[in-house]
Picture 1: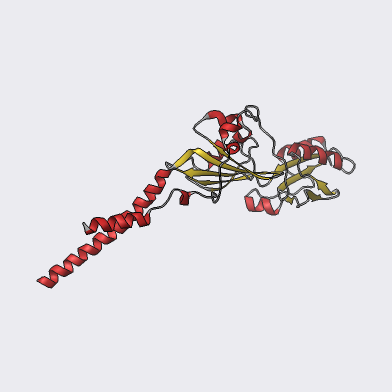
Picture 2: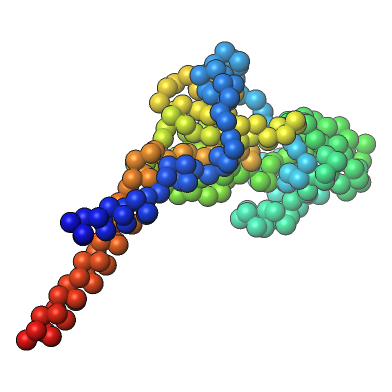
Length: 268
């Protein structure tokens, strides 16, 4: 009887609440407009929106120019080398230190042109802008623009949480979760939080991955700098508590065994 009371007390004291397992939920109330079911109809099916450059983005900029034979120029252009741009290694650290930073005002400082306003523009729009801007200085100019930090952060109930780079411009939320190793057994697929940077600040929505409706919204596609958080099911709180209690019970049982051995030895 006493042992049962002790076990019950330990279980109650070591219980982990479901709320304690959830990140980014302090004081949060889920409004109707944050749910994926209410987002349907707000955008055309699979309406991909090209990413628009924001302050503090990193851009890989290469400018190729005709300075020899046509064959040499085309081979250099197709191989991605040469020109007046930089040519780094392509690991994330090297790319960061060899790319051009967009300052807090939305400008990037480039050779000859100096400040160029790129905020709010797509990569295709920036290419067109630079091709025109360099034309007076360079013969047959052809620029190549890439986003150097196309990363998303995937947290919560996935196999490999962390920062993942997505180099295809049309990656979906499912692609991001796939890069993170897929859902765990305790993931709540009905409540996947997506936090996205916009011109007006961050916006948060919840996607129900058990339904295909979320594919009809703009949130079907992941955007650079998205934070994707997969909430745990309530069952994980019980599982965590049970594991804690199991460790405690094992320790108590071992202590009781040693106590019995000592008592038996003293009696003999």
